[in-house]
Length: 259
Image (cartoon, rainbow, N blue to C red; front, side, top):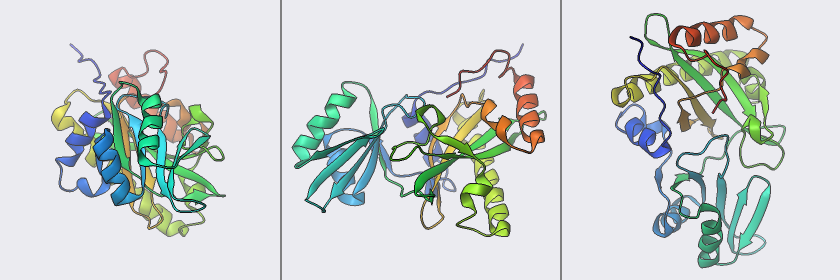
C-alpha cells in the first residue's frame, strides 16, 4: 500500500524542525511568532523584518516592515506594492493588525536580497525522493520580483529566470557552478532533516534568499511545490527528471495547483 504524500502547511512547525539540526541553523533566519513584543524586539535588533502568515501560499499576506530615519523617523510597511508609513510603533502595530487579524503570523529577520536589474530575487530549490527513495535536489530556478513588489512569487507578478542569469552579475561562471552545488547539498540536507519529523514527505521546494554577502537563507520550505515552472529551462532533462520522480510517488497524478 502506497503511503499518501505528506503536506505540512505550518511554516512555524517546519522552521522548528530545521532549527534542530546544528548544520542547518546557520541558514534559517531568526523567526518568532508575531505579536507586539516580538515585533518591537526584532525591529530593534534587525531594523527590517518580514511578517508572514503561518500557513499562506503564493506570497499572499507577506508584509515587509522597516525602521526609517529618512525623510523622517518612524516605520514603513509594505504589502505587495502598497506602502504605508507609521510615525510611531503603536500606529505601526495597529496598522499591521488590520492585515493580520486573528490569523497566525510569524515574524522573520529581514534578508537584504541580491538584485538583478534593481529587482530583488530569490531561488527555488526543488528536492524530491528519487527512485531509490533518497532525497535528491532535482532543479534550481530563480524568481525575480515584479518592480517594487515585496515578494518574488510568480503568482504575484514575479518572473521565472535561470539561476545562472540572475547570478551572472555577482559571480563568475565557475563560482556560479560551485554555488549551485552548495544549494543542491543544502536542499538534500533540508529534505533529510524534515523527514525526521515528517517521514512521508516526498517533495519540497525550498525558497532560498541570497544576501548581499552571498550567504544563503532558507526563508521557508513548501511541501507542495509547483513542478511546472521548470518547463522553461532550456535543459529539458531537468523537467523530465522532476516529472519522472513526481509520477513515481504520485505527486503529478492530477495537475498540481502549486504552492
